[in-house]
Length: 97
Image 1: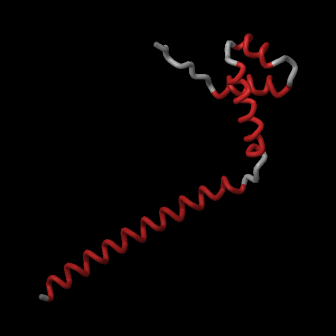
Image 2 (image 1 turned 60 degrees about the vertical axis):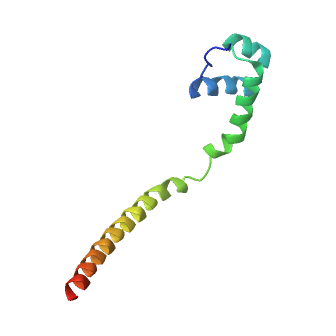
Image 3 (image 1 turned 180 degrees about the horizontal axis):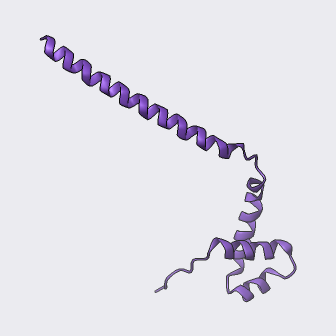
């Protein structure tokens, strides 16, 4: 039946999509030159245009990752402290009986 599917790198997809967006040559010509189906080029072009706004998005969301890691570390520390206290209390209650 069919063989192994071709997989293309992100760089290759970007290069072909950018070539299609520029419109210097037709999609069919680009497809022949890069040995890719024209529908695939149209799909990559559409994805590139839809996701282009993310390139210029506000960079503050990147700094939130550091805040999330700090919050996670604090919560893990608090969980560990509470587990320690719970074990200590269980031991104390067990000794009182």
